[in-house]
Length: 352
Ligand code: 0PR
View 1 (cartoon, rainbow, N blue to C red):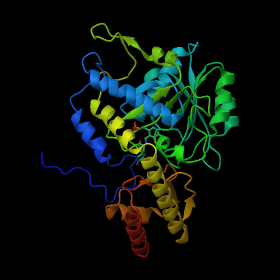
View 2 (cartoon, rainbow, N blue to C red; view 1 turned 120 degrees about the horizontal axis):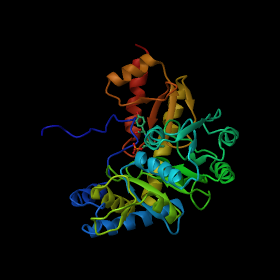
View 3 (tube, rainbow, N blue to C red; view 1 turned 90 degrees about the vertical axis):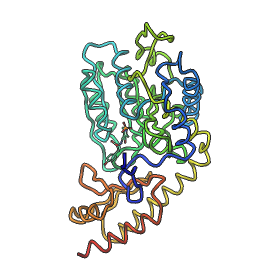
View 4 (cartoon, rainbow, N blue to C red; view 1 turned 135 degrees about the horizontal axis):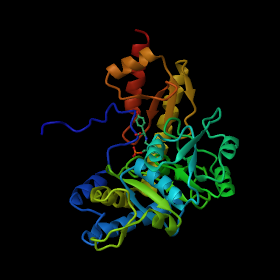
């Protein structure tokens, strides 16, 4: 094979990043292990317990239950699946913000649940009144996003917990991207602030672990029980994960990254990313573009489509929001020098 792996020097669109060197090393060492078969691959199974405990500390859970999933999609599907399996209705629905990730649409299709989508307000947070109106006795799950894919916003999670409680539904918090930056802000998103039942937090995004490493966490063992199937020919008796054979590389890299970076390394990473996002937002605003205030390290700005296309032709990996804005995610590999060079290209290309 002669292909070069990804060059990150112009990647501004991704929610993934280069893994930390210790995470890369751990991933390589555990490439041939399968935490889906803990009776055989005992070391990686023990590492997964360590990973879940460490993620529990980040999300404010003393006694966490869960596992290292393949990513946010799997974790979100599992949240819907657990809620559906626990719901006492034949016709379950899930109420979620329109800003929720498209993985919930996959979950709904797979699991036969109805999705009820609530609009967001002027600041891209879900309208709690709309959620309240959509929820009823058949609601199995209410979803809130902590760090939304397009604008990095955090929904009013406490209010959503109340709505879920009134409807007899579970609350799921999707912190797939936000989970490793929110600890360093004053936002209330953790299990010890919010009465959430399940949560997604992806080490392969801001956590600097190797792909695939997602996190599915819950406060109650009943949720995992609701996901478990019997496994007659394995040493272990049941399995709650969605996939069978899984990546031991992902699991080991989570433990390595967290040992190395939690909390100080992640704090420094957050401060640098947020400063970069604020700098880019100011630079784009100074040039007359409408910019969405970056509350977390993610910038959206309304630049003309022709400029967007020219920047892509220059090799910048940038993406667009549903509304068509330029979207830049200030991941750890995104340096100030990269952004300066990007803004220099904006200046050069907007005049042509
Ligand atoms: N939840 C949130 C809030 C997410 O942002 C994402 C992924 C997921 C769940 C799903 O995670 P996995 O992909 O690990 O299953 N976020 C977007 C995505 O990759 C990020 C994105 C969007 C990246 C648009 C690039 C882009 O052009 O789907």
